[in-house]
Image (cartoon, rainbow, N blue to C red; front, side, top):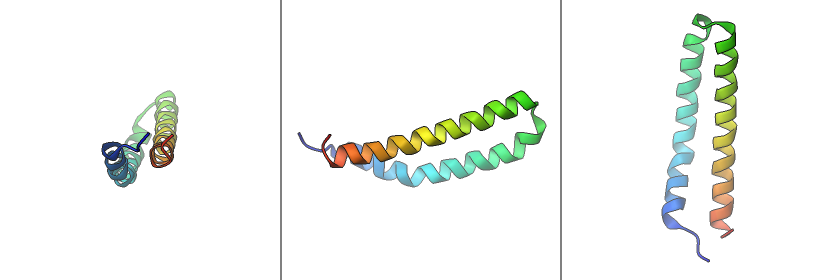
Length: 70
């Protein structure tokens, strides 16, 4: 079993784009947070946190799995 070069390249670039995405989403969340009702505020913050944690985990496990050929 060999590691996948295209997957590694996509993971490499995604590691650099993820903080940019996270910063942009955080800024947009901050700008529109006070304009939304409380239940949308809760849902928006929850979705942002879940997506950020899932993406970080995906990148970590992708690197770990691809480089160690698992």
